[in-house]
Length: 426
Image (cartoon, rainbow, N blue to C red; front, side):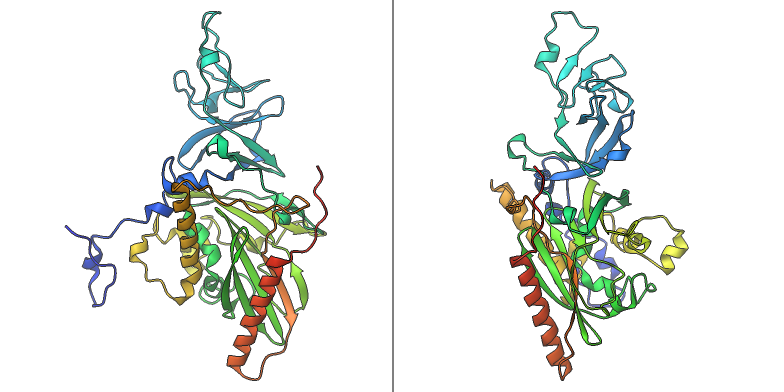
């Protein structure tokens, strides 16, 4: 039986969708050996919070792989395959040791790099520990998050330090985990869908941010050295409010203040959050974030977290849905063949094309582009909010043109000439 058409043109024709096409595996499936999974594995991925590493091992699942993370008594962090190389017992029940972790079942001791240090019960002349290793991934701890590199060892990139981590007048704090019951891609597509801000967060579900987010923005998109960004410009009285949200390859985005209203003129402000959407498997995603907190503030406002997880009664979520509900409601994995993409989906289309191109290049043997590092050690990014006093043009069409030209000019200037930052310490 052949697939039914995705486009319906007659009333009462749902039967035509009973044989739907599969989801788009090239950019959604993330297990080992899949095109998208291999792409994501070429980058450092956050896997847990530093504070989660106690005297007990932490069992996790990332991109379909069962792993155990621990900090040994030397302070070194290991990320090993969950099941012991000896008989397969889960190392989540292992004993964190002075050096590495010891399996509870027969006492085999594994170092943080997977080397076998001890095989008690074996003859003294046994060479097992010299011939075998437990599967392990390199780790990097940075400001409250633990990262792992899960790709081929020969292609391991340097750990990137984004400028937003050390922006003057701010500090970063690792935020809590957030879970989404859906594929990683639809979580990340949300960051390139600025139109939803004017409906989901303002008009249709009650004002979750500021009323000014309900003003439909003039939209444009720009390639950046780290990925891509949307350019949204809004008219707020005599001001033009420029907002840039940036997608950073392969699964990061940064965004500005959700309590901005565009009414007070100010220069470029840095993002308030840097967030990863890390696949647990094909149908579950965990988000890790750095909150970028201005000096003098204890934290960023709680409104940023509204509707991000399944933590409210179902009826309340129906009446006032948030991002979690909109994203999980697209199915576990969105079926792209059943979508009807429109003008407002340009950012989603560009993001999918961006990822598809990089994944196909990797399949052809070309490693993903690495973001440039400036003379002070930073990888520069571009998410921001800027409010400029620029009175409206004489007519609405002229003002739309003014907003678009202003937004484009400012975005290009930010990308070409990022502000100077102090040199990173050696």
